[in-house]
Picture 1 (cartoon, rainbow, N blue to C red):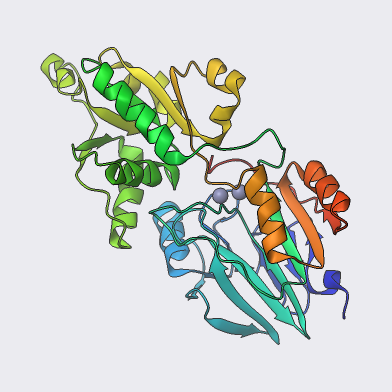
Picture 2: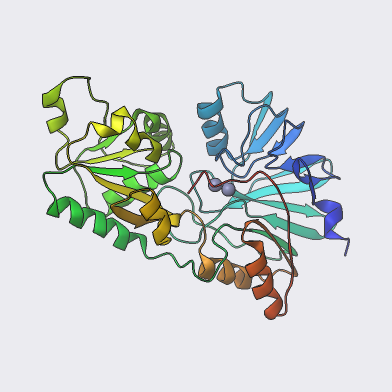
Length: 342
Ligand SMILES: [Zn+2]
Ligand SMILES: [Zn+2]
């Protein structure tokens, strides 16, 4: 078998495929050809010559960066194959956000799979992660790659929110959500839990919610949570309602106008008590779009690769776990990934 690093290796611009002459999720500057796993800003940048991604990811990039985010868009449906300079490339669902994909690269009998960000749980807003068989090298993210990270059932977290809404019927529940992925997932989960009242959303979420709806994700009735300045009667209408917005907006003028709010934040990091405290979150909701420790280790066992490369977080603990399992593993030091999706 040929050496995997001939097919994919780290460069200062990101993960590079020399025979195919393309990058996967390049984050340092523009490249001629990029394959993009999903639309979060720490993976998808504007300005590349050509971008190959799922149609959903291309739409998300156009919505965020403008229609001219790249010179050439190449939509690729899940499972559809393309040849790039003799390297076969296809995409498999990653279960992270709408359109999120694992990139599968096949060349001279060697198969490498790059997960991008992923989770294993069922999510009403995107296709569930699929295990790619016969993977030689599995490149896994490890955002929550420590055994202390065990995310609870999302239905339980939504039940907590709905119980609080019932209990404090005079207050507004302000739910902090990142605008791409988390916002739409929280809305869809509330609908699944039977919450049929209108949901109020900050202007920053409206465009991406509409985009999700245009891709067949039903979010129910959404209303603008923009308040007319000085209209005192207006704010009363939010009593007992759920309002969603980016966490940063709660401290600005917009957020301060809601009556007696219960501040919530939906994030995987809410399992870390200290983070909830620092942010002044009254009701932390542990909801992650990344695999937790059990999902990470189960996925390695399910995929059963000959080699594991780990990126994007706490590489060392997962490398150590893999080695104790008798597996070949190494950290992949790629710079530039942040935590937008969380
Ligand atoms: Zn990421
Ligand atoms: Zn992401």
